[in-house]
Length: 109
Image (tube, rainbow, N blue to C red; front, side, top):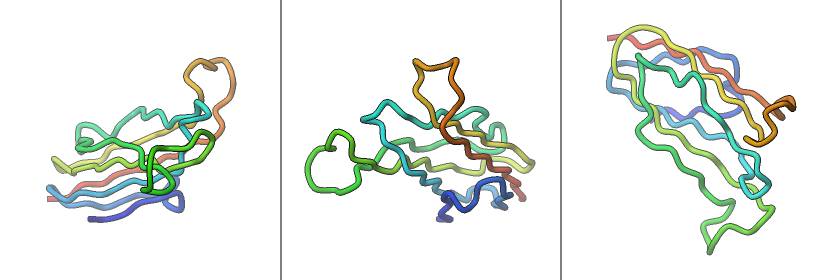
């Protein structure tokens, strides 16, 4: 499985049909900030898992402590697609986003 993180922002990722990559970005949902995904790379890929890991695997998440948002993305057909994520509080739609992340995905046979 190919691992993608913050250092891949703005880059192109090459995948083969059936290959899975894992996108991991720091997130602190206890403060209301969450990564929002749009567009999601369809139709060339699909998200097979979407979850948040706490900063430590010991016990429940602690308020104010950050973690990691994880997406597992499978390449499903040849072509190109884009993923764009914004890091913001969903109730603050009129405010600028705190961060953004983009990824161009190229899928080959």
